[in-house]
Structures are given as structure tokens and as C-alpha cells.
Length: 191
Image 1 (cartoon, helix red, strand yellow):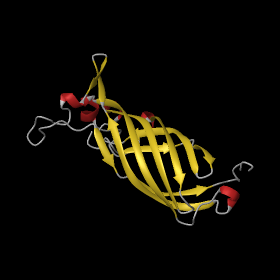
Image 2 (cartoon, helix red, strand yellow):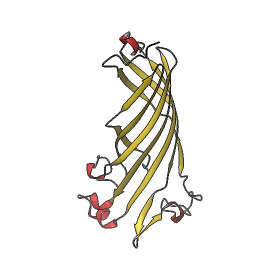
Image 3 (tube, helix red, strand yellow):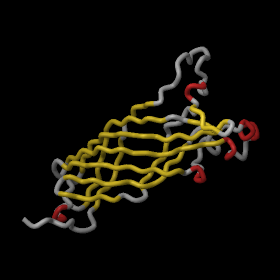
Image 4 (tube, helix red, strand yellow):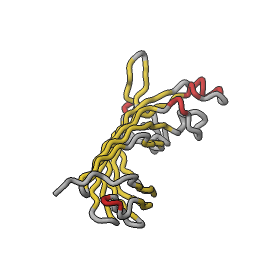
């Protein structure tokens, strides 16, 4: 499970509501695991796709800068039974599943400026970066029960150079690019 945190999470249904410069929304989608317990360790195995969901709040400070606070949940899993071209791995018969909880604080910079209110600037590519923390706890089914793997030392704890258990919390630096587009003018309350 060296690559446990290599997760592909994608949003299938973003729904956002706006009120002046504050936005809130939900994300629904799927998550997948790529690692030593996935099909061929380098390919996305779609049968292992599990649910993912999240909520966020975004404060637009002006047409260039925004900050987003979000909470996401995902389930990931992997199993040697998915491997078809390696008898040793298939016969090893290891598997796991884990829920992942993530909190993130992200800054956004709208390259062209973004003002969907009144459609002054309804389109802008943007870049983002921030900090995130994730909590996870991999488990495997053993004799009909889901057993936590970290206390068992499944990553070699107790061997030379691996004296302490792995942490079940990790920090990340999310970053990337995106595009914002407002397809219509949001409702403006009358004053």
C-alpha cells in the first residue's frame, strides 16, 4: 500500500448556490485506488470505483482572488483478486478498504478575473493551491470481521528501519488549474 494516497477523485455533479460573494456547494462522484493492490499496479480498475462526496464554501474577495474551505469523504479499496496476469500476486489474495476524510483550505486566482454577477466576466481560467489534511484507516476482512491493518504492521513495522507504525493522518498540498463559467445571470435580490 505504498501508493495508498494516490487517489483519483472526480466530481460528477457539482451543485453550487451563490449569495453575493459567498458560494456553497456539494460534490458527488467517485474515487479509485492505484497501488500494489490494484489491477496491474498502474492502471485504473473501474470495478473498484467507490463513492465520494464533499461540501465546500468559497469566499470571493474580488474578481481575482477567492478562498475555498472544503470537506471531502471517499471510500477506496483494492484486492489482488483483480490481477489477471500475475499468478503470484493473484494467489497472495490480499485486499483492503478505507474511508478517507479530507479537510482543505485552498486559495484561487482567477487569471482573467471572474464576475458572474451581472455576467461582467462570466468566464475565467484559474489556478489554485492550498493545504489539506487527510485521515484514513485501512482495513481487511479476516475471518468475517474487518480488521484494522495499521496495528498489525502490514507495512513492515517491526523490521529494521521500520520501527514505528505508519501514520493514519497525512498532509497534502493540493494545486492545479481549472475553468470557471457562469452560464446565466444568477438571481439578484431586489433592494
